[in-house]
Length: 88
Image (cartoon, rainbow, N blue to C red; front, side, top):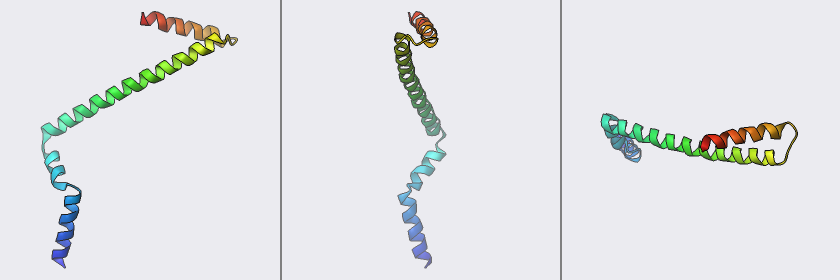
């Protein structure tokens, strides 16, 4: 009975790759490098996402400005103009 339980536990530990996780958790340098690269990837993802959403918002604002909607188009045109000046 006990041997079966131990064998099942050992098989479960192998499936979970417990040995690899313990090795990773005990290696401080590897954890720091892993956290660093996760931060770099997260930062790049935020940068790309914000750029795409910002570009989409500018295209929408330009379309609204071209339609000459009362009240909104003057404001949107001014915002687009200021953004374009800032980019130059």
